[in-house]
Amino acid sequence: MTSLVTSPPVVMAPREDGAEVVWGVSRLSRGWLEWKSADGRRGVATADAFGMVPQGDRVLRVRLAGLPAGSELSIRAVTEAIEDPAERHESEWKTVRTFAPDAPTSRFAVWNDTHQNDDTVRALDALTPEVDVLVWNGDLCNDWKEPTWFTSTILNPAGLDVSADRPLAIVMGNHDVRGRYAYQLEEFVAAPEGRPFTAFRIGPVACVVLHTGEDKPDAHPSFEGRVAFEPLRAEQAEWLREVTTRPEFRDAPYRVVFCHIPLRWIDETPADYDAGGYDWFSRMSRDAWHDALVNWGAQIVVSGHTHEPAWLQPSEEFPYGQLVGGGPDADIASVEAATWIDGVATPESLVLTMRTLDGEVLHEIRLAPVTADAMFATAAV
Image (cartoon, rainbow, N blue to C red; front, side):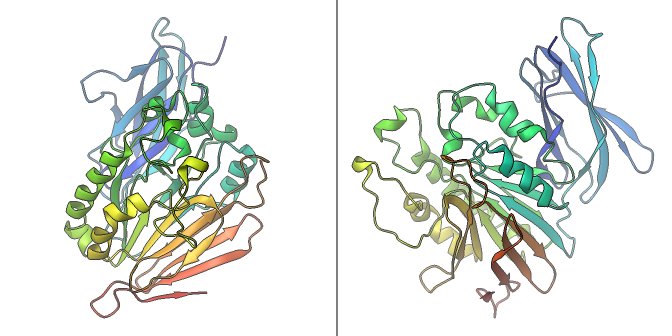
C-alpha cells in the first residue's frame, strides 16, 4: 500500500508569532502538530480556522500561532488515516523558529526559477545554509499539467526537506500560475494572511513580497480567460501604501522587495504579444507600485524570471536597484546557469551576494542602513 504520508512537514509562511506547516498525504487523513520547547513545555496544534481537525486526501496544513517573537520549538506532524485510525504516521522532530524583528542581525537566502529541475534543487539545497527565511522566488514549476506535481515540486522536491533549518516564503512566478491545475496551488502554498503577497521583518530587514502575475496582459488568448492579475496588482498597490506606513516597516534600516518578474530590465522595448513576445520585466506591476516603493524608500528589488543574472543600479528615476537571479534552461535541464543569493544584515550593512553553483560571485551588493542622509546609498562590486 502507498505510504500514508508523501512528504516531510514543510514549514512555510513564517511570522514573528508562528508559521504554517504543510505536508502531503496519499488518502483521506487527519493530522495535527505536537510541539515541545526547550524549557520542557509541550502542546498540540490541532484545529483549523473553522474548528475542525485538519483533514484532506492530498495535503494537510496546521497553523502555529501565539508564539513569542524569536522563539524556537521542536515540532512533529502526526497523521492518521480516516478509514483506519490505527494507520498512523509520526514525522521526525524538526525545529521551527519565529522571526525576531528586534534582532540586530539576520540572514536570508533566495532561490528562483528551479522549474522542477531536481538537479538544481539538490545543488541549491546543499549550498544554502541555515537562514531566517528561504525566499523561493517563483517558477518552482513549468506548468501544472498533473495534480500530483504539487507534492513532488513544492513539498518534497528532489525527495528533500528543503525547509529544514530555513522556513519557506514562496513567491508566485508566472509559470506557477499556468497549467490546467494551477488553480489548486493555494492548497499547497501557505502565506501569512492567506494572500499571495505579504510583508515581514527579520531583524533589521523589512521584506515585502509581491505577486507580479503573468508576463502578458490578462486578455491574452493563451490564458483562456483563466487569470485576473490586473485587479490583483491594483489591490497590492493599495495594500503596499498601507503596510509600509506601519512602524516596523516604516522605520526599518533595510528595505527589500521580492517579486518574480523584475520591475526593471536591461532592454525595456515593449513586447509584441501578437508575435509570441512576453514581458522580460513587468511594466504593469511597476506602473502600479513604483510610487509606493519610492515613498517607502525601497532599496532593492530581488527577482528572477529572465534566467539571466543582472544588477541594475539605482538611478534618479528608479531609486531602488534591481537584482535578477539566473536560472537553468528549462528546455535542456542544465543547472549551470542557476544562482542563489545570500543576504546578510548587520547594523553596518546589508550585503546580498549572488553566486553560481560552483561558488563564483556574480554580484555583491552592499546597502547602507536607511537614514535621512543615506536613503539610497549603495555600493556594488
